[in-house]
Image (cartoon, rainbow, N blue to C red; front, side, top):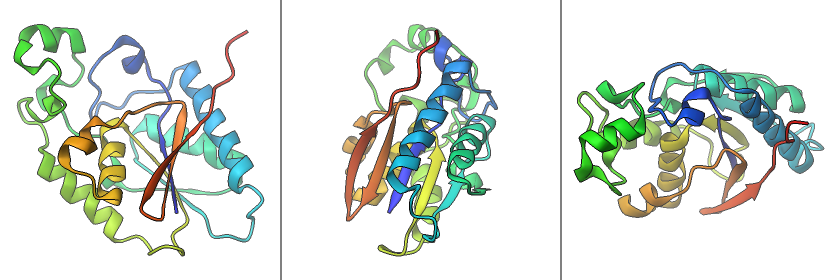
Length: 198
């Protein structure tokens, strides 16, 4: 079983900027989202003290911090793997989505847009690195993983796990207030709401 989490909100998410490999930090809302994910996981598996659940995350700061917040709720350590990093969006990283869209109107509604930036990773690149990571994990039912990754990378992990077509893989949503349970070849969404600011 895999519980897949996307990192909490960053200032780039809030401001609608392309992140890719830029090492952004969580906003206060992002930290609350991470805590809500940790609370949900604690309710779901926190009682399984003797089960060897492992937490593994992308080493980018936003995923690292999210994983550390979750790990603190569960009393477990975090390991990191570069293959769980977000897609590299080349020369468009750091730019506003609106500016990229204005300069490239042909990409409107194109779920493949992040592969079309100069020096970006390709679909095949992402399939290879996420697929290689997934292939190394224990088979079910021994697989007991909590994974913290990113929007596009998380789509690939879910899509490769479930054998989705390219189109279906890229159509998946990427919430920061939900966790996906991957088990028995199926993908199940578990919603969790962050505590609002008072």
